[in-house]
Length: 176
Image 1 (cartoon, rainbow, N blue to C red):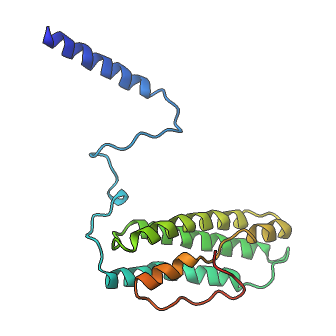
Image 2 (image 1 turned 90 degrees about the vertical axis):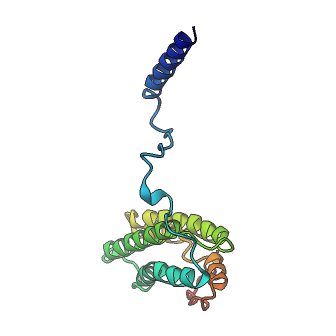
Image 3 (image 1 turned 30 degrees about the horizontal axis):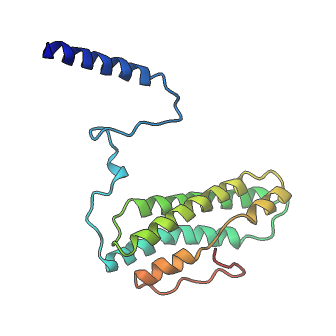
């Protein structure tokens, strides 16, 4: 009797498992432990504050440089709009790399909440850069530019928590 209950239970589970394959693709099932991506969970130990500071400085450098190139470009015109769009796209890619890099490390516990908040901010910034890069006219470009949060008070908080010197001030921009 017990064996038939087990067989029925397994059959029901297999049937239900087959039905879930028909479900909408918008809901993703969590990966099983055997199929989980290695990069989804940091495998390294928690960093020391000193190592975290060095890592943060390296991760932020390319994003900061790309932002500076974009912001330092001459006034956008129809003639140079494609250059501006490429610079915005580059800043977006560098911001995504920065954000991804933050998630790949195990930060000290006292810094982790600020890092998580900064990561979320960087994802929003990267999306804003993508909207700038997609602009078709100078007017659309300028409107999208106004929505890019090019700096954040979170970077100052992270730098302070990691014992790094204050970051350079972005001229004409107030941290969000």
